[in-house]
Length: 227
Image 1: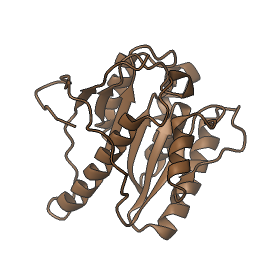
Image 2: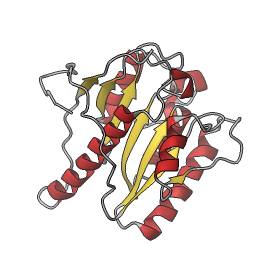
Image 3: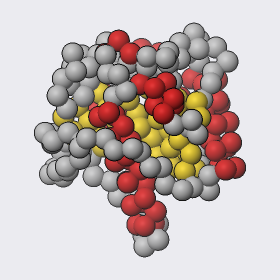
Image 4: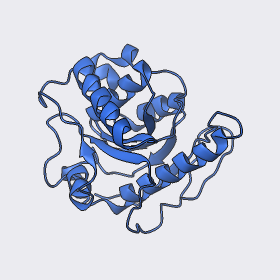
C-alpha cells in the first residue's frame, strides 16, 4: 500500500497489491472479533478462518446482546489465551461492534494486543458507549477501514475516531457495512491490509529496540467501489 504523510488526513489513491498467501510472523496469534449476531459462513471473517484454521475466533455468550463490558471481557480472555502460545501477543481482526469491544479492551489493558484491523466499526454513539472508548493514540498499530455508505457509521465519523487512535485510515469505497451483504467474497483487499498491519507490527518491534515507542503516520487508502 502506498503511503502519503502530508499534514492532515490526505487520501492515497493506490489500493493494496494483489494478495499473496498470508504469512503470520512467528510469535503472533490472529484473533477474529465478529460483530452483532456473529459472522455467518459467507462473511469474510468466516472465510478467512476457513483458510487459516490456526486462527481463533472470539466467541460471545450472547451474540444478540451488544454489551460492551461483556464483549470486551471476552476479548480480554482471548488475548490472555493467545499470550500463552504466542509471545508477541494477539492481532485482532475486528468487525462492527467487535471493533468497539476491541477498543474497550485496549482502553482497559492494551497489554498483549500487538495490533488491530478495525473494519466498519459501529458508531459508539448509537450504542451510548463513546465515553468507554479510548480518545488517545493506541500503543500498537491499527488500520481502520470504513466505507462511504455504511449504515452503522458515517465514514467521516469513523475517520475522526481513527485519527484519535493513531490509525491508518482506509476508504473502502461504497461497500456498505463491509459484511456478507457487500458481496466481497474472501475480500482479498482486506487480507492485503491485514498483511500491511503485520508489517507495521514487525516494524514496531524493530523501532522499539531504539526508542521504545511506535510512531505512526496516518494514511488514507482508496479502493475501487465494491457495489
